Structure formats: structure tokens, C-alpha cells
Length: 72
Image (cartoon, rainbow, N blue to C red; front, side, top):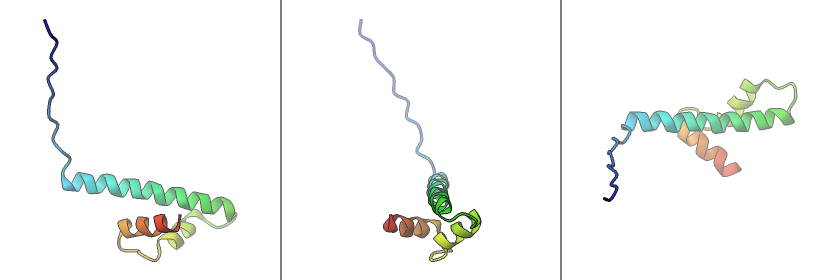
């Protein structure tokens, strides 16, 4: 008797869910960059560093990520 496994198709996340996941990942990347810069810049608030890192593309987290990633 052979064993067979049944694959259950899971629905792909909706566009809204995927955007949410990507934005969350982008926030993590930006925060990681900000923390690294903060270690080299004692006394500068993390929020200020984060704003400086993302100021060139304030309207779009995806553009912010691409800009930070290009510099790395």
C-alpha cells in the first residue's frame, strides 16, 4: 500500500496583505540602518537619524528602501 499525501492549496495573500508584508520588511531594514548609524553617532536621537535616512523619498517606503539599499 503506497502512502499518498494530499496537497492543500493555500490561497495567495491578497495584494493588500503582500504590500503590508513588504512595508513591514522595509521598516525593519530602515530601522536596522538607523540603529547602525546611531551606534556611530552617539547623542543623535534615533528618530532624527531615521528621518535623515528616509528624507529623500518621504512619500514612499519602497523608494526609501531602494535608496538605502543602493547606498549599502
